[in-house]
Amino acid sequence: NRRGLIILCAAILVAILAKGGWDYLATEKEEGIRKAYAAAVTLPQKRSFAQTHAGHELAGVAWLQIADAAYAENKSADAIAAYQESAKVLTEGPLSVRASLGLAMAQIQSGQTEAGKTALQKIADSASAPKGFRTEAAFHLASLAHAAGDDAKFQQLAQQVMQIDPASPWSQRLMLMQVSKRPAVAAAAPTQPAAATTAEEPAIKLNLGN
Image (tube, rainbow, N blue to C red; front, side, top):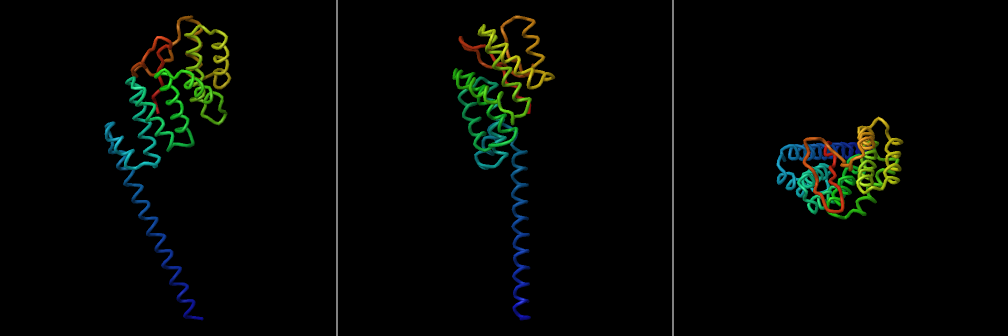
């Protein structure tokens, strides 16, 4: 019995040491990935990081940054592809909604207007999405409706924005839009470059702040 007990204790000790070693290696690997992400400053470096560490959450963040940059430069196809890569990894939480919002805006920028509008409406109607993203999605839809002269749709969406978050900066912009009676342009931070304009759609900017 004593020999069996010694063997059992030794086995438990080996298991504990093995788990400790595995946890240590996992921690070291994670730290290495974080350092690699921090070192990826340029867009080519971010793309390389995302491809090397495919499936990691930080790879999804890198794809999101690549997509935002492409959107800001009016490279719709590149933006759509990168947002889709980001969405494959960021499947839940605020960053998932952010990727979906970016994809919707890139679709509108590329001329896939109905697909983009449908995606924006889904975000605006989602009770589980962060209020900031919901109000932004509804604002962009209201902006499109206003520019198209669809006052009934604009008023409906403006009301939705106010219901979601009346204190939101997007709500304030809608108020200014209503007062000005000028064609609406969904503005992002003043430092961000404008999105492309087509003959059918107004220029729309995506809030690129993270």
